[in-house]
Image (cartoon, rainbow, N blue to C red; front, side):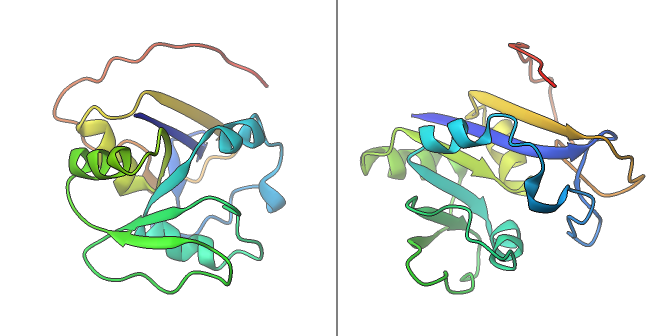
Length: 159
């Protein structure tokens, strides 16, 4: 199974403010920078509960037609009408095995802590990072603490 990340960050590397607010991101998402092609390539979304609840507050549900698996130790809020959502918990490798056994081939991993957990487990094959031209000074870092280096291969840069 392929697991990918598509995430926006401030230039100083933060994916959200300390309180989880994403107000520094461009309204309406700004330029898609390949997001449409990316989301079309995935079978399902694996997302942390906090990020899921942030997405619920958006005007439009961004995952139409894709099953969303919300990770956490407590049940998430109900999904919008017509959305397919399931609550899962467990280690990233176990979650990948479960989804692979159900026929999923490419998952979109989203949410700061969830991305960090999947990276530490070496389960992410592709990361697309969109840098928003703003410095916010403090916030939730994309990568957080790593106990060892994770070597990446730069494929392309575009603006």
